[in-house]
Length: 490
Image (cartoon, rainbow, N blue to C red; front, side):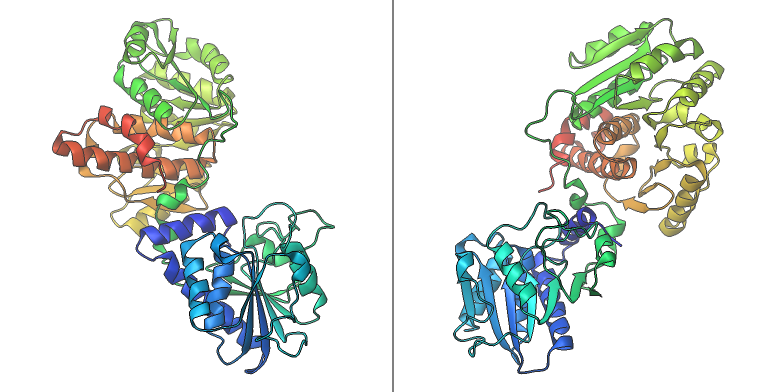
């Protein structure tokens, strides 16, 4: 099954792979026409009730495939308000082909039997196609959709819904306007690519139509994965994420790169907890960072309580950049994670401790393949075998893994996603720190698996832009400032 949001992402990823939405709409419309043929004999009267979006566009295509039927198309609204170019093109095609059409601009005039050149005898049509509203709609039906839904329900004829019955939430199966709200009561539903979770609860036969979306659109990250990550225009400071980076001591660049990346990836506030010996240097990189110095020159067990207090004030902790190794570091990581119950991105020297810690924390681990083996995982040459090994290890440790490589593998133990953005120049030191901070910012506003997948995608995209500009001279500091552009989904 596939949720509404994920389906929108897959659809956009398919377009990025070279399968245009217009082609998918043609396939969807053909599938709707096949469903009509399954319930009505040639020569029967068919009314198609179409909204002004792509759901309606699917039915506009279907009308062209039903030339052996007495077809009447009802468009709810004026043609000039059709919302997408491809739906508008298909409306124009119907008019050019002289297929019977009616525009409904006043709900009081809606009549399934009222098209002069369509259902000419005033009789109830033999089949009705509901293509008013697709998935992703919230709230109760408004006019003219409400009146149209009532007319469809009263028609006592076979109703075929496109993707989901209008007024039904495709993810839950519940009416979008509440239990007493108007919704189309469909006899059959033709949905696309994969079944939606809410359709199981409907008293309707469901057909899943393959419309030619390649498996790669789901398996690999793409621009569709960025959908839904924009800021709410009414949000306030802190509502887009607060991130604490814990690291530094032997190194100053690593925690700084993570912190700067978290800011560029959209976090409102980023704090860095690092030893006092390097706090001034970290602060000197940017006035946008809030730096908390910890006594001494290494992070150790004595700092666990202070770091836990700071972590409680943030949505996500990025743990590990520049910490260095040693018994004290491992003891700190173990003590902190044992008590921590929030969300954290774990990277670098903090990784090897994770499999041995009993923690209630929600972790995203970002090892390269060598670090994965150090954690107890396995790797392989082939991407499919690698992906399965990562999935198995993620299930074993109970956390999300983002395993870096020429092709990144992301898994939470159930789902697997691969990422192909990035280039060999990103083997330079520091790019992993940028990735950890980016994932940290994203994990503050979305679930861990999605944050890891999107983080891999956008950092690779930023690296590709940096390589195009700087060639083999790419360095990690080139990446953070390119993240905002990499996160655009155009």
